[in-house]
Amino acid sequence: MALNLANMLQTAIQRRNQLLYENDIALSSEETMRGNYVRLDVALADLANTMGWFELTDKPIQANHDDLLATYLKAMDGFFQVAAKQTWSQLIVQSDDKLAALKATKKAKSLSQQYLAMKQLVFDAFLKHEQPAFEHAWHLFLKLGLVDLEFTEDELEKAFLAEK
Image (cartoon, rainbow, N blue to C red; front, top):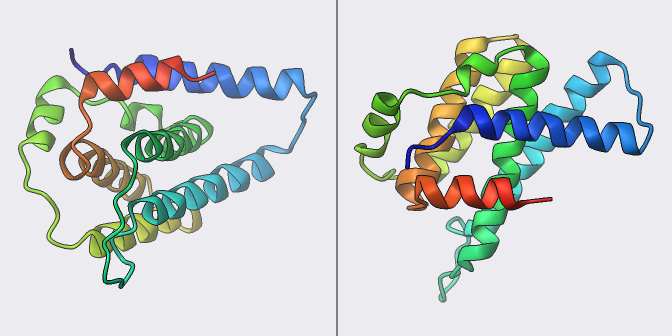
């Protein structure tokens, strides 16, 4: 099954709109944008923390698969929310060929480098309004999930759509 990112994006937008409606939350467009970027930044940091590769210990951290998946999906939702608010949703949807090419890449030699690059690109997207930076960060994030963390497309989609 191919990853239906368009459906996942629409679901994320609907969930956020429902949350805002049910809780009568009204923020300015600018504050919503800033909040979305902060949530994405924190979610990426939580993902790194859950993965724990950067910790210098005598016993490597073994992340629980379900915790790792949940944390990854929270960061994915962060990307969806930023893309929706920036009207960059077209950057989220990937063709089957692009996903296949992404999955054919090698695992990262340095997760630290990959993480720091994603963070820099996300900051550039916010501070400099750079759409290509966001797109590249998104591709790195997808690669992290599909290649480095070895999540399957089916697993990602089912878990994301099952969230409440």
